[in-house]
Length: 278
Image (cartoon, rainbow, N blue to C red; front, side, top):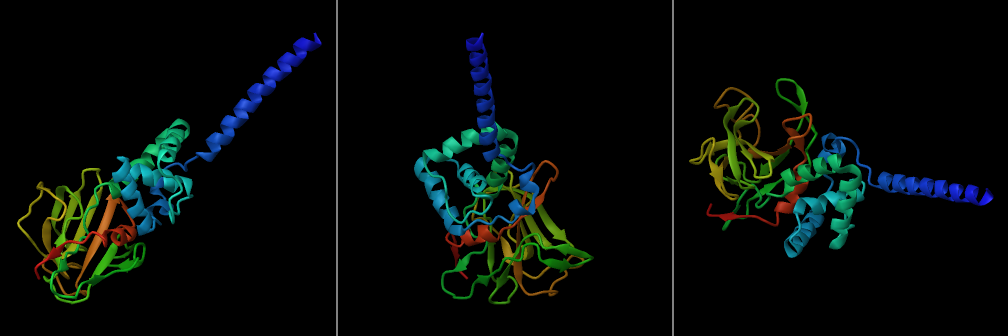
């Protein structure tokens, strides 16, 4: 009888240990529900050097760029100052997230894909001959006030030479022109839907090239020129210095278009600049 009792106790103890082990492992791969909709995610605190290194790994090992970022982001508590996982470790970590928290993992992975997988060029072409270019800072979330207070949903790329129609604006990604025309706030703007469903927004243009809604375009396509249009009825200009408002939006469970911080994207894309004759 005692022997039977000990066997039962060992069996129960084994089950408890297995359950505890699964719980501990599951806890280590927990993802906050709808993480992509939090300011923690939307601020995209990712060093441009990490983006460059991740892109290199993706190309050398034929990995998905967004999955490299997703696994490292989740494994680093949302602050990607360095890569924690490389090589086979990436796929191992991805399998664990899929096993224990698949739905939320897919949301984060899709968010990163929409933001990063289609990036190719900085949105302002640089002159082949002149030295005047642009500057920008991290103004995402800053207070703005046009027809009521709101938060800034992008970054303003300011012209060093404050001349409307001087700087060429190019598409950062391949995609389809989803919106074009006047907005009271954004002036003459273009909205492009990328292949991985990111929405890339270019505002305050002085003019367009020969593009129209529905056109499929390649990254680097000239969209128009930097201007100072907006903050009023169509044709309004001169309410602010010449600049490009650049925004990135993703689709989430509760939002059709949710803004994310493009600052780190711009820092990364400074190493991928096109040159033009102007």
